[in-house]
Image 1 (cartoon, rainbow, N blue to C red):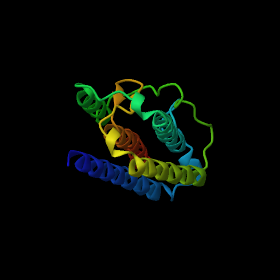
Image 2 (cartoon, rainbow, N blue to C red):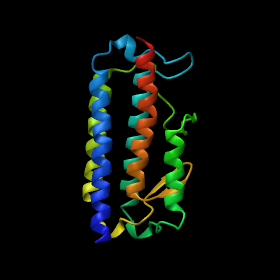
Image 3 (tube, one colour):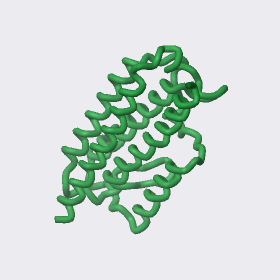
Image 4 (spheres, rainbow, N blue to C red):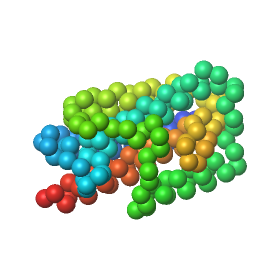
Length: 181
């Protein structure tokens, strides 16, 4: 029964992530190319660059999990403090703290095409959805993902992180959109 509840929780967390992503993309569809590519502040990323970064995070996260699933019996069990670390990470993302993007997800192009980002985001969401739906129940409590700051977390915690990370950047984008008016 616990596994069924965990699978359902993962499904619900994924649906929330998908809803957040698609709603923001709908909001951004009306931006001009110049607005989409305008840095939020001097030396900061544009909305398009933030979305490229989010796509990098989605791709690298799902790629890492898929790689680990090639030898699932080698994945460590979630530890006693896994939930606490995950909660702290998500609280930090909800705060007004600023973070430096980890290496690998910190490189973004100078100019970004909205439609390319939108298509890529939909592809990434489908890949994450497929991953969550096909994830074997017997590994639900394994620490499948290694976050660069907090270390190993479960699939459910990973999806929660991906949504918290998305919302962290969505807040930046919405503030920029509000301030440009």
